[in-house]
Length: 177
Image 1 (cartoon, rainbow, N blue to C red):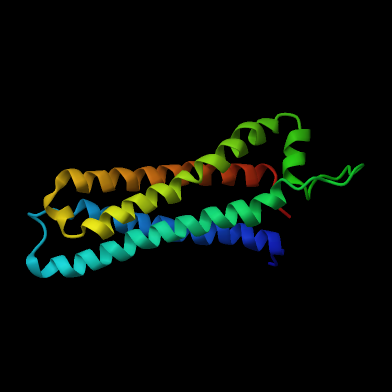
Image 2 (cartoon, one colour):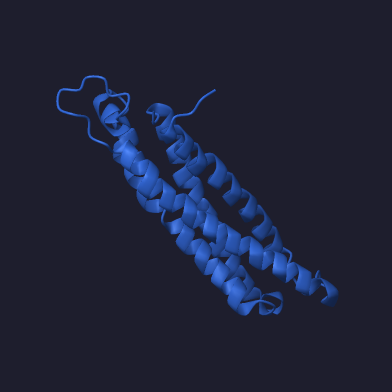
């Protein structure tokens, strides 16, 4: 199996960075959820907080890498305009979707919505990471602060999930080649 440069970047954007994002989310959410006074010993606080800080910071960084590679590397290939008179649109996914009966909505709604909602994920993940890094051990005793971080964290995941799902469907309908 051989991948073109475009296919490799698309796979890195969606499958590698996306998988890292999912792993960081799962670890970060578990860490935030279990950060309760009755579940944390004095000895475990230091180790748990270090793991939590690394996890949420990692998720925020991966969210930025995923969004930036999607916006500035993959998306320009998607929206490239075919030369005048081109009839084979397989190398021009946006034009292919718009020209294919029944697939135009994938661009009109899916891609237009995806490219905007995707930017929410790194912003929300960064806000959650800031709360964890700034407040640290205070998250153990301040339930509202911990819940604020959890809500931001889950919202970042939801935004990334929506963007990723739309991206997968669009790639299936009109792959980058």
